[in-house]
Length: 82
Image (cartoon, rainbow, N blue to C red; front, top):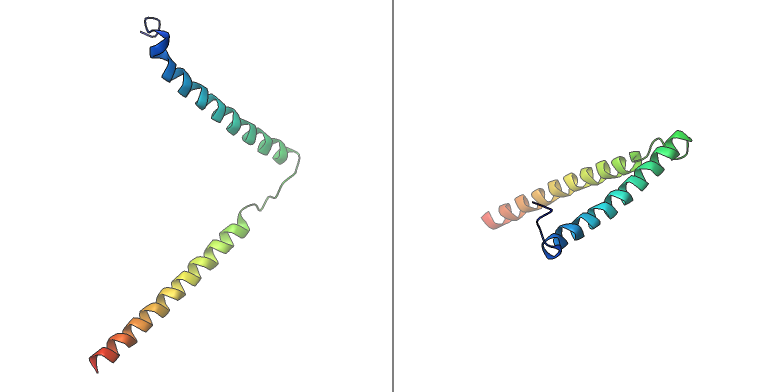
């Protein structure tokens, strides 16, 4: 089927293929660099731990914020009842 297609019919597929190839090469370059750094002992073995701690703190802060909001809503409801 591919052989029977005209250049015009093939063009969108070739463009998409080229884009995917560029993205693949970019990802492979990043992956290989990471692997190379890992093999050489370069880099942080604890990469992402700070991010996880920050996210946990933020989530805890959000949880506390929601509790405060709930308390304020309850107080507002009590005032309206009076």
